Image (tube, rainbow, N blue to C red; front, side, top):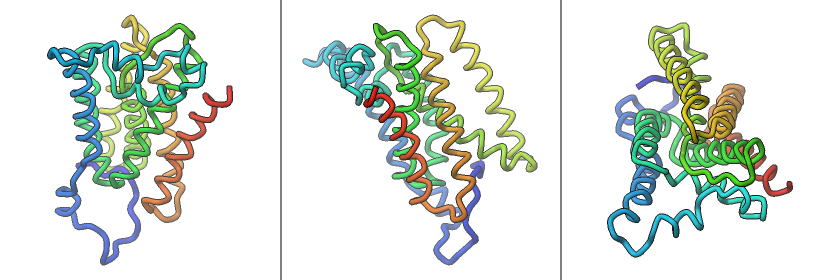
Length: 232
């Protein structure tokens, strides 16, 4: 896989390449599983309906304004259509496990939640109060942002340059879709992406690339997004 994040100096404790490749990634695959279940269960004749799920988890901006702040995060578990689900979960499958292996499961979960919160908060502040939003796109664009910063740092290597070009092209295509395809929240995409860029940038400033330091930075970005929603 591509290596995007500087590692600490090699020590006896550092994982070997084989150990890194075999490191489990329960968060990335767990998030995919939950999203798929929440999409499928209401459609197979279960007692719970899509309306029931939306009632408690979707980002209804008018309810967020009434104090139900958690919706800017929980909406990332829901998807409006099969194509919506497939694109986001494909992106999570491609980019999530590699990143989780590098930074650890706890840090990855905090990163995902924080960028989802940033995307939801941006969609809340820049969107219409009457809007209902679902989808993991904010968090997915957050992963894009982190990967973009990491690939920029190793752009002088063949692998880094190739990954950077791929990400720029992918982001360009998605940016066009965000503005020309109806009912896509460009605000959520933008907020998640900027949060990912910020997290990746501050990770690079860490003197010691520890899981605790990375987790704290990601959590701080997410908490700022949450507090902005809660106090307004």
